[in-house]
Length: 154
Image 1 (cartoon, rainbow, N blue to C red):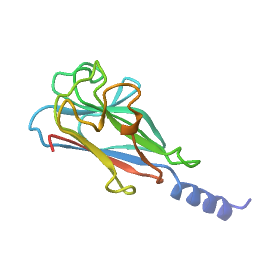
Image 2: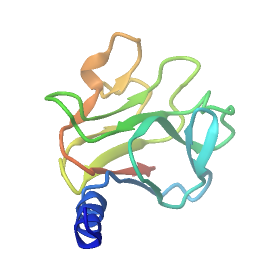
Image 3: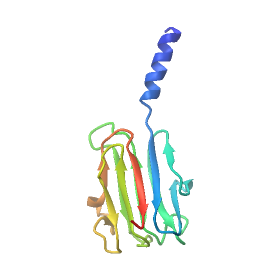
Image 4: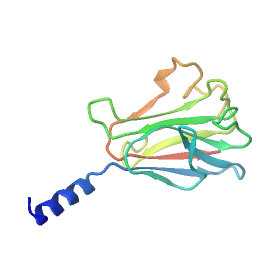
């Protein structure tokens, strides 16, 4: 393969690279938005861009929460380009103990699946996991390179 062909392949591959961004909107006037994956902090309020899939990440507003959001309303997300029908992104809000309602929390996809999301405004919100089998509250998105906005106190 000649140099021009290699450059063309690299440009096409780069243009098709998977990327996802998570942004926060903290309207509470207190606390610090936290995004974590596998115990590692990825963001403390600023936008985070994953160059590739973002799998099994959690987000919460740290207002005295535990190290993994215990005692607070938590968003769980996997942002991944779908490879087969139904294998794309999925996001939800959880109040399964040890998590509990702390502040109004919502999320919505953008750059695809616009308008899909959920809000949790009280401890009994029907849009959050309360038990592990509440899978109907998961919000899926089957669009490449979708992004996620998380809002606190909306």
